[in-house]
Length: 367
Image (cartoon, rainbow, N blue to C red):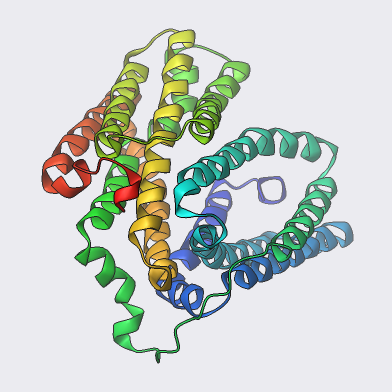
């Protein structure tokens, strides 16, 4: 987009075009995921995504790809991911026994973190060769993903045949509201991510505070993903078994404290260490929260509840970057990151008392 328009506003519209469909489709997505075969929903979304990537390739080759076409493609991709995310999350408990769900979530997180580390690097190398290579690789990868998803063998589950009513549309929100552990888990994720968005300020820290160049900024961007990857591998091999509630809040406390350390650091190596721990502690929290949401939700409601969860996560990511950027603009990057870390610690402490049932969970087998 930027190569075509040289316009930062147009670049920002790409993110907005992907975010808006997720918000607008949340309630519809949950209904679909609970009424139809989730595996089929996922691979149909991947087929459409592959077609979109193929059209971008075709448009680039024949010279008609422009700003409007890219924004339209971003909207379609955003809509597909709105369906794909909750459906794939709700599909996972159908594929593995409850006893190893935490391990499966950790492995899934590990794969995701690996993609976050390698994806931008490979994408940058491919784009150096030309956008044609980016679009063709994306098309081929999505087609492979479609085939792999189609080949998954999942348990046959009887889907609901209840009519779609206003009550059923909002039933996901009602279910979350009526179950304190799920409400506490999802809302904790919202506020923790909302306040802990220091990574959005990495370019400012790299240039103005740590005085490092593009290579240092690249290391800083990679460090949280590396920490997350290492911790997810640990959790896949050594699942958390005891004091689940206390460990969740401890992980959030560590996340807040190392965010504060990063904010105050003037040494690149210390900042990299803080970012590694930020990524690692975040994964502990993510694995516990994801496991609790899945295990506390009956299968017939998982699509709707995961749709609500996806909305909270997506909103917190977007607003978290906005909050960090706004505070940094008003008072500077260091106070903004420091306030975010302090806020995360305060939220963790507050939620321990607002949701005692979440704090008291000793093991996932209680779910």
